[in-house]
Image (tube, rainbow, N blue to C red; front, side, top):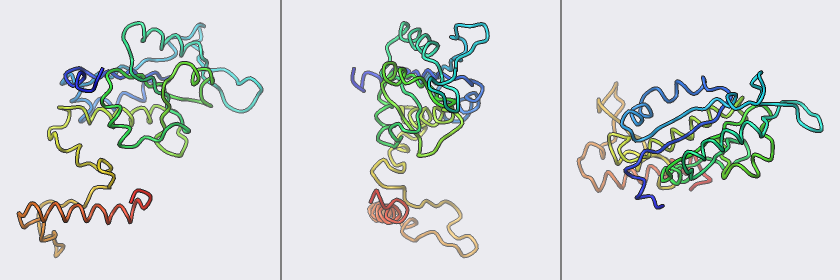
Amino acid sequence: MDCWTYICLTMRIDIITVLPELLQSPFDHSIIKRAQEKGLAEIVVHNLRDYASNKYHQVDDYAFGGGAGMVLMIEPIDKCISKLKSEREYDEIIYTSPDGQLLDQPLANELSLKGNLIILCGHYKGVDERVREHLITREISIGNFVLTGGELAAAVIADSIIRLLPGVLSDETSALTDSFQDGLVAPPVYTRPADYKGLQVPDVLLSGHTKNIEEWRHEQAVERTKKRRPGMA
C-alpha cells in the first residue's frame, strides 16, 4: 500500500507500556489532541500488565545468568502484540531502545506515511532478547542516553510522526520548513515589534522582496547549520 492510500485514513498508534499513566498528558493537549479530535490520528495505550499470566500481574523477571536489573518477559509482550495483530495489520512494530536507530527527520517523514504502528516501550533492564529478534520490526532511539523507561521516547516518536500528517497543522507548509527537513537547521525568525529597545529586525525581512528574503533565510540556515550542527553541513 503506498503513501497516497493513507492520506484519507486515520493513522493508529498502539503503545504498549507498564506505566500507561505516563502517557496521558502528552497526548491530551495541543496539536496531538486536535489531530485525534479531527480523526486524523488515533493513539491507544495498552497496559502490559493486563496480559500477565499470574494473579500478581508480573511482567518482569530476573535475567538468566545473573546481573543487576529486571527484564520484561516475552510472554505478556507476545500476547499483547498477537492480540493487536489479530485485529488489524501493522506496518511497523517499534521497540524503544537506547541502541536503536536514531530518530531523525527523514525517519519521522518515513513513518508518517505508514498506517498502523505499534510502539513497545522498553523498561527496567530491557526486554527478553527473543522479543527483539522475533516480534518487532524496528528499534528506535531518541538519543545516546538512557531514560527510566521508553514512555517518553514513545511520546516523542508519536509526536514527531503525527504532526506531519496532512491536516494536522493549520498551515500545511509549516512542517515542510521545519529544521532538518532540507538537511539544514531552521534560520532565525522574528516577529513584532521590528524595533525593541534598539534591537532591530534585519532589514531584508521588512523589505517585502520575497526572493531576497528566501536567499537570506537559506544563507542563515547554512551558516547556523555549520556552527551548531557541523556534522550536517
